[in-house]
Image 1: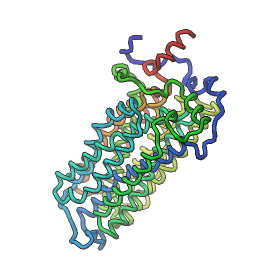
Image 2 (image 1 turned 120 degrees about the vertical axis):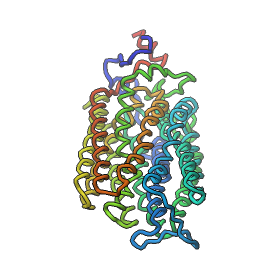
Image 3 (image 1 turned 45 degrees about the horizontal axis):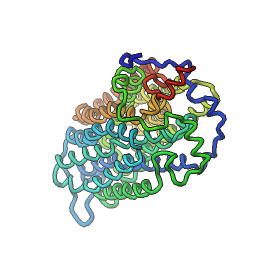
Image 4 (image 1 turned 60 degrees about the horizontal axis):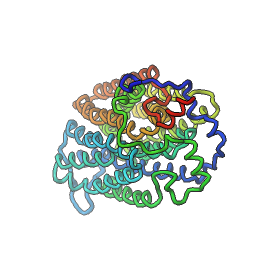
Length: 482
């Protein structure tokens, strides 16, 4: 094969990489308190911080533009309220600014993490974003342009975090534990949104909206200290890992757990249908996700008329449901593979379809709820809950089709997946400029249609097989001799 045509895998079974005889003979060390599980826990809290830093403006924005909400005054301690006359279009631009920066560091972050290891990039990305978050109140006082630039810089720093996570799991996650380790660590994002939304509302009510950014930034800096002390790029270099666990991880992953070289098969990736089968559904899923992430507090304020504390708590409920379902989906997916009930491809397609199509149904239903707060919150929570299933589907598929290049692939898929983060808040601002229920109905119906399309696309074109262009020289030589 010349590597420049549309790729397909030439292995007979997509379960083969998971069930090689040599791996089966390795004694599996206990998972509890293992280094790999400790890494997952640190990543979980890291991504909780990441999403706290990302969504804090969504809640604070309500106070920054309204000043008072049902007699709740958000003022700076010892000073007068800082109220900004930003219209919905400007608010949409400010909420999307983060994603302008987030776009540019995805691919470089994934590539460099795959080459040098991901711990520095993940920790540094969180630390840099946390420091910048501390400057948010000052930038808001200087003007909307300064706040836009600061949020874009925060996105620039945070853009490396998810690709770095994927690159690290390519070296740390045994194949039969991938789904549970990766969904648990990634579920920190939903947990972070769940905690940050009500907590920022409470802090704003009690201490004023500037305290939201000071507290979130401080927590991010504290987490970074623990990360740099406790984490290593791979099992071989970890000072406290047991020989048994180190042997198990290294032997079960094999040569795919080694760093890739300076060159990557870019053209093969570009023409790879399985890679595009990840990119398109992730963009579709992210449209709905980012619409809710950035605009749900505004919807609950302008349409459902919840006060700031109710708004913050109810906006967080969907993320609690998404967090619980995503963690459960990882355990269920690995169990299906361990028992050999389904192939990797079948598991990824099943969980992706559930995680994109069912949320679309519930988003469609939200459009018919009108001003019923109970029904709207119920359907939004159900949508996010079932959306958690995609965490064990398309969102970890990069490590199935190309483990060595998983960080680079996640950088590519996240770059495309971030485009909805830029466009969705702007589109929402345009559709809801008259603050009408009809405008918000169109927002939810658009999100439902986009999500349903992504589910169908992945079922047709997705796969869990490792691609020929992703295989190491060692694996290619073995196949040639066989």
